[in-house]
Image (cartoon, rainbow, N blue to C red; front, side):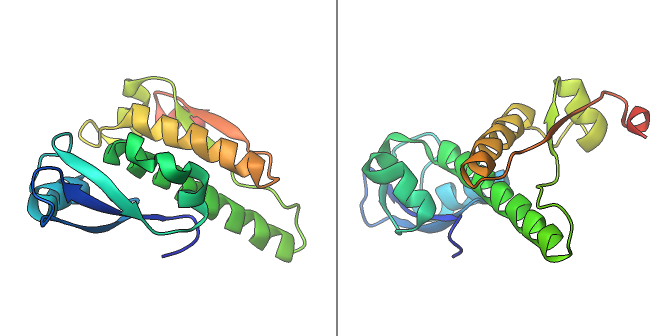
Length: 159
């Protein structure tokens, strides 16, 4: 587990014997499979965040971790992972003698913008934008001023 990920123990609220450790972030399909197969519940039903491993991300959230849904925690961990990747890219640029600057983060104005870039079945454009916004906040906290671009509905128009 790296410093920016989050490892949580999710437990079935009705059956404490059903549960397991999950390192976030994960793809939504993997999260659904874990919740159904290991915890024994649908994502939004009958589970508790029983524990988490210490680390930067868990320390930021503190003891109130149980107040968040696993989907929200996954989204926050995605933002943290994204900020880590951007910070590493900035460090590489500085090591190469260039300005230490994170690559731009991309927001999508509309669902149609998201679909133009990713396809209609990739879903989650609002969640992705929220993760990008959280990543921008984390980058700022790391001393890197994030730059942001907005995707246009027609990917060809960007070039």
